[in-house]
Length: 460
Image 1 (cartoon, rainbow, N blue to C red):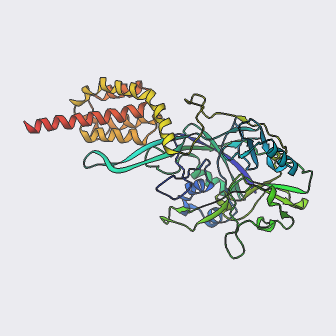
Image 2 (cartoon, rainbow, N blue to C red):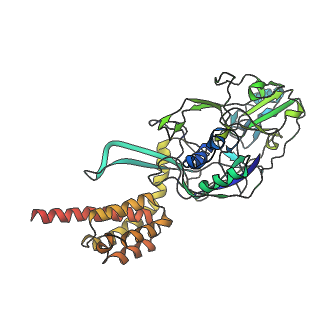
Image 3 (cartoon, helix red, strand yellow):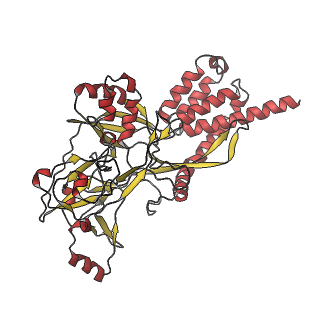
């Protein structure tokens, strides 16, 4: 089997949900599941000579994408990593003896599991940054927001780079996969809105994770990806013994293991329906196995759904070797206001933080619009033309907005309507920094005053 790596650059914010819920506190993902990349390629399912081998076997594996940290591959922080409350000390708890545990209790030191974020092999630690946007459904008939239809999106921030790998057995397969995978693609939820734009390219790197030999008889299995385990009858397994992981030797030492589990309902886009619930062990889990034979101590895949990014484990990775760990905290955005605020999953706090950040620019945009909207109200372009301009601002990125609007107003029936004010509009768009927000507000204000003006004429 051969491995190739690819980089996924976010052109816009990306919405990735961890559950099928449409109400309440919806779980958001901090990685890109491999089935997203499989799905991009599977849009061309019929063009493959043997699609079963590519999409439904384990001959081609689409890995999960993790963020790059200092231009290095990253890994979900092991669940055995703990911090001492109200102190900077951080411990890899698998190496604590019973005496150490007693000592911590006597010293009244409480250990808290570090569950969030990713590390690289240099122990640089960071968390993906999210943005939160409050939305409302649109009432096209009354040209306003619909009542009682507020909702929000938590999205991974644009401008970040993520890396994933594809493992394959045939060069002809990967050539055809790359034909449909590389370049600009749409990813995640809300792709018809302003979310989901990515650029996928080849990435030249090698994954080299040193391993260590444990001083005792215990080997530590690190779940690099989610693990979906089943018995011979197809029933999901709650991990009980080493053979559940495909090992022929050893037994699980649960007192030194740190495991979390989860479940979700995968959605099948072709069927337009949800599949059977999947139960899995979370990535980052650490499973201790006593008496594992030497010939089984190698990185491998276990369980089902390996073609979708599940099942990869690493045995005794170097970042589990030491008792004391020195995590170097990196901030995703050094200019973020109020760094003292800790990351929170609470939607209201995320919303308020985002609003505070947006207010720094919204006043300038509003002033720019107020100075320029009047010259367009009396011009020829109709309300529907301005509606089309606004839709470009919603669905396009800042980089491509200018060209899309330019092509629209210089071609077809629109060309005649925009003849007199084309240059004025394009000059304004080229000059402003926040193009999307400026165009959306300008189009909305101009449309509103055109309707008022038309109503006054009708009354006369």
